[in-house]
Length: 53
Image (cartoon, rainbow, N blue to C red):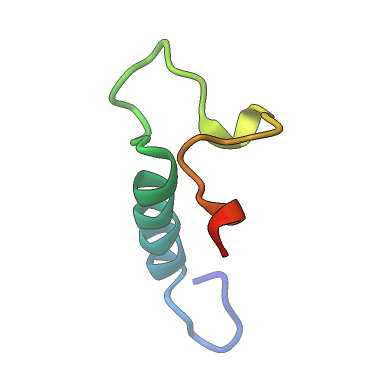
């Protein structure tokens, strides 16, 4: 365990993976040629609907 208050760190990993799948349609390890979404920068990300607030 890495958390001093006993929060299971694996829960964070699972939550982040779920959010990245939903927002960027990306799953780590499926395509070795794909660039992970958090290693790229785009002014307008087509899968994020931030301008529809």
